[in-house]
Image (cartoon, rainbow over all chains, first blue to last red; front, side, top):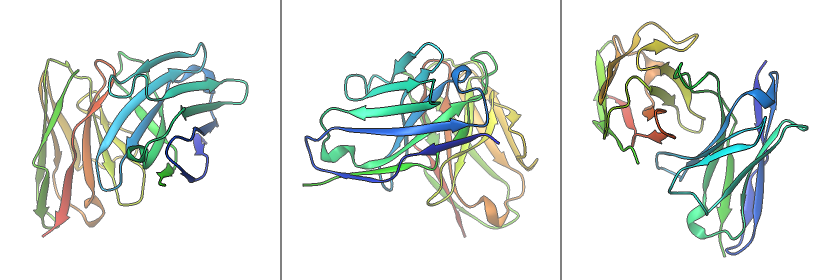
Length: 122
Length: 106
């Protein structure tokens, strides 16, 4: 069974750093892209970036380029999303999701993690 | 950036109604269009990929259509479990989500 299990909720102060995780199981982690999606409470979905764990090829949304870093460790089947200096506006639920197919198939995010709530407050 | 515009932002409908949600891309995205359903407190779930292909396990009352810049998601007969928020998303260049359409009970 394919599963993406994310790390638990975090409460941080502005200016602090953070790294959250997404561990895949039940499939060949290295050969499927993993994306990250932000959802501010009560708002819509925002695509942040995507990584291919096999070679760490990474793409970012222009809105998030330079604001976060996406990485992956194929040896532990885990993808990461990190911030060097959090802001209150980073308060949101963050989801990881697996791209299940090839680009040409258009088959996109078929499995999602349960979400990680990040709260940034003084 | 490719912008995705959904309409309406919300709608009220009754069980059994036929419901159509539209999504417009700011440029030609061929059929690189996906639809997701999200229920309160849950993560999104893939409904339709490639504009018109149903994801495994999705009921046949859901259907997707369109190509280029204009797309639709139709629910032929709304069921109680379909009350949720629906998002379109392009995968032609990077990714962009629409703003969402909340389907509420009338």
